[in-house]
Length: 425
Image (cartoon, rainbow, N blue to C red; front, side, top):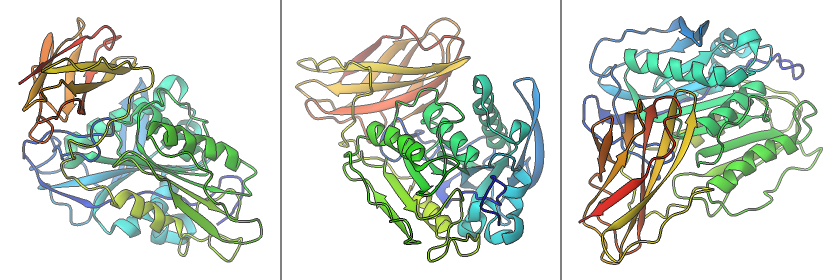
C-alpha cells in the first residue's frame, strides 16, 4: 500500500454478537445514559432480512447516496448484531474499504471483517466527491438515514453502534462522536483532525485515537486535540501519555485513568507517517500484519450489553446547572443537544435526603415535538406532557445520589424550554 496521498486501502471496525434475543422488551441505553446499556431490538429483528450484502442506494437530504453493506454469512434475525461504520479517506471509496485493496480480506473494513469473524454488520458509506465535507451536517444526516434503513431491514443492537475511519474518514468519525454521542457507543479515529466539523462535542463517548508522530498531512497535534475533547467530556484525568521516539519504529498505547466507568479514552501513537496500517520494526505498512486492526477490535469488543450500576457517578454536563436535591423525593435537570429537525435530551435525577425506591419525571414537550426513543427510563407517551419512569436498575437511589436517563425526539427547534418535574417515592 502507498503511504502517501490518502490512497490507501483502509479499515473497518467490527464487533461481537449481542446476546439478547430479538423482541425482548428492554430499556435502551446509549453513551449519554449510564455506563453500559441494556440492549434494544430494532424492527428488523425476528423476521426475514430485507437487506443483503452489497451496494445500496438511498435518498438523503435530497441527494442519492450509497453505501456497501457486509452482512455476516451466518446472519440470524433472532440475534442482535453490532453495527460498525467504516469511513474512507480523502479520494478513497467505499469499494476500497469493502475490498481491502491489495491486502484483500485481511484489510477489508480496516481489518475488522477478519477480526469480527462474522459477528458484526459492517457498513462502508460513500462520501460525496470521495470526501466527508459534511456541509451543513449533510453527512451526519446521511448516517442517520443509513441507520434508519439498516434498523428496519436487519437485527441490530442499538446500544452497540461504532464508527471508525482513516484521515478524512477519521474526521467524519470524530464528527459523529460530537453530534451523535447517544447513537454511537464508541469511535476509533486513525490519523484524523477536525475536518468534518463538530456539532455538539460536549457529551461523553468512548474514544480511541491513533496517530503517527511523523504525520505531515494531519499532524499529531491535531489528533491530540480531538482526543483531549473526550478526555474532558469523559471525566478522565488529564495527562501527557508517552509517545515513541523518532527512529524507534515502535508504538505506544495508553488507556487514560479516572474516566467515567464505561467511557474509556485510549491513545496510540506510532513512529510513522500518515497511514492506517503501520507495522512495528519498519516504516512500511501492511494490512496483513499491522497491530492497529487488533487494537481497534479489542477496544470495540470490550463493550457488552449488560445493565449499568445505578451507583456510577454521573459528571455534570458543561453548561448545565443541577438544582440541589430537596429534603425528600427528588429533583431533575435537563440538558439538550438539538439540530435541525431533532434533539437529544439528557435528564439528571438527584435523590432528596430520604432517597427513593423509585421515581418519575414529567416533562412538557414543545408543540410539534415527539419522543422517538428512550434509554434508562420508560416513556408513557410520545407527545405533550410525557412521564418518564425509572427502570429496574436505577429507581432505588440513596440520599443525594444521581442517575441519568435520556431520550431522542423530532421536531424543528423542539429541544428548548423543557422543564422537568421529578416525583420520588
